[in-house]
Length: 107
Figure 1 (cartoon, rainbow, N blue to C red):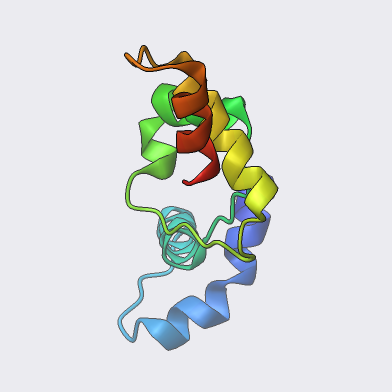
Figure 2 (cartoon, helix red, strand yellow):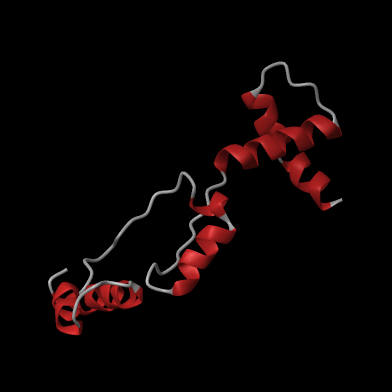
């Protein structure tokens, strides 16, 4: 019922947009759905620092496929070091802990 009310309110727009528009409840609903599909945009914000970001990207590849990632601010040095520490500390590198620490600091 609500869909029909919304679709019927679009009647003047449908007649204006489509000159030979055949007025029927089904055509009004189709016009409504087509209009929503062409005008609907979704903004989804997630922090890439969180482990949940990578997990969600793997679970739902459709969310991240074909999207635009905007970095609004430059990453602070502390954040870059924290991310590199997280990755490098898990890597099995054939070096001393001092060398590993130097890799993290110089990234």
